[in-house]
Length: 401
Image (cartoon, rainbow, N blue to C red; front, side):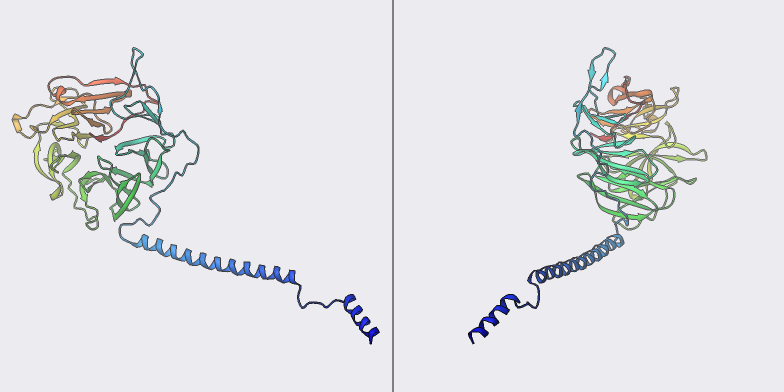
C-alpha cells in the first residue's frame, strides 16, 4: 500500500494535471474581445453622431435665412506666420523731411496706417478694394479674385480674420454693423458682431442685380442692365420682389430724418438732377433740383449731419470732371439756391467724414484730398497732400464720424 501510494504521487508530480484553458491566453483573448466590442460601439456612436450632424446641417440649409453652403469662415485659413499686432512706422514724409500722421485711417499698398502712428500688415488680404472703420477694428474688402471677393475683419492685434469668402459683391452700412452680399442667384444680409456674420437671411435676386448700400435696415439693390434702376429689400420682411425705380440713377446717402439723397434722370434727354427720395415709396422723388450739372451715376457722399453733399459734376464755367460741394439746406430753393463750390478732383472711391465737417478722400496720383466744407463753401480751397504710397495705391478708410 505504501509503495502504491508513492507510485501514485510520483506520477502526479511527473505528469501535472493539465488545465482546461491557459490562464494567460484566456486573459489576452478576453482583452481582445473587450477592445473589439468597444471599437464596434465607438463606430456605432460615430455613425449616429454623423447622421445627427448631417440632419442638423440639412435643417439649417433648408431653414429660411440660412445659406446652404459655408459662408461664415471661423478661424484663419492662412496659417503662414505673420507679425501680430500693429507696428509703428512713419507715414507721410513732407518735403521738409518731417513725419506727419494721417488725419484718418489710410491704406497704403498692403498696410493700414492709423492717425496714432500704427501700421497694420494686410499682406494676406492682398489688394484692398474698400476698408470700413467699425467698433473694435476694421472691415476690409479684398479686390475680386478668381473665386470672388473676401471680407476680412482686422482688429489690429491679431492676424486678419475671414468673415465672408467667395462672394460676388459686398455692401456695408456706414457703421459696419450690417453687411449684404450676393452669392450666385441669392442676396444675403447679416449682422456683424465681433468680426462674424450672424443672423443671416437670404432671398432670390434677379440676374445683374447687386447690393450697393443700406438705407436704415433696408438693402439698396441696383440693377445693372439696359433698364437700370434701384430697389430696396427689407430683410426679414419676405422675399425680394423688386419694383425697379428706373428714374433713380445714383444713391448718395441718407439724411438723419431717413430721407435719401440721390440722383434722378428726367425728361427726354435723361438729364441728371439732385433729388430727395422717399424710402417708404420705393425711392420716389420728393424734391428735385435740376439747376446743377451732375455726373450721371457718379460717386457722392453726404455728411453725417445731413448738411453737405460732395458729388461729381461741373459748376457753370468751372472745370469739367470735378467734385462739387453742395449745401443741402439750400440746394432745393430753386433760383435762390447758391451755386455749388468746386471741391477739387472728382471722387473715385468713398472717403471719410470727420469733424468738423471735413471729407477726406483719395485723389489722383497718390494725393490725399481734404475738403473742409464750411471753409470751401466760403471760397476757400481744398487741401491736397502727396502721399508716398506703394504702387500708387491710396485708399481712405470709410465711415462716418
